[in-house]
Image 1: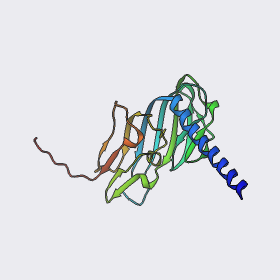
Image 2 (image 1 turned 90 degrees about the horizontal axis):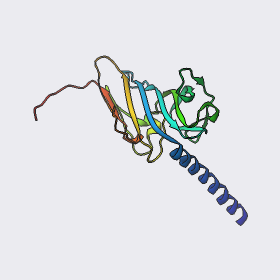
Image 3 (image 1 turned 45 degrees about the vertical axis):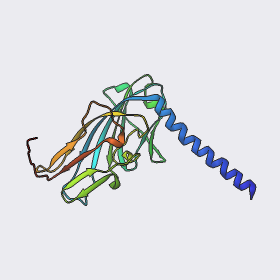
Image 4 (image 1 turned 30 degrees about the horizontal axis):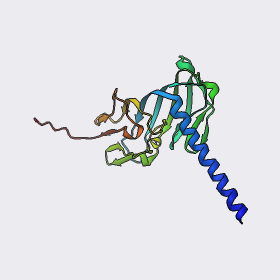
Length: 196
């Protein structure tokens, strides 16, 4: 029994070290992240929110790239060295990550990944004709594919495809933010103006 317990502790320690090594490797190798995000929010709240993420980033050295994501995805295209023509990627899904092989990237250069996806319902709140992000730390990976790594901040550009009568508000800043600080809201709001 003691041998089984020791073996179990060894295996769990090895798994934990492997997960931490992946996080550390991304922190040191990925920078200059820009998320260009498009979301389609249907008026019917029973239909899921879908989107496309165009993620541009600098990669210090050629390596596998892991994007955190808990939703569903369809197509993943990689633009090696930010070239105009991309290649479809064979992605391995592991531990809520989309792992893209190193051979599709250029080290010491800017690379781009495009992912078509459907958001995880828990990342959004829907109240009648209003939809908005509802993220806590480490929950950004339910909204869109991302580098959900502590200390790795990014810039965001957002496009919201919503019913014509809806109004939208989104983070579109040159200032860098963590994934958990990203937000958008869309819905049938009533406008009010006030003088302050």
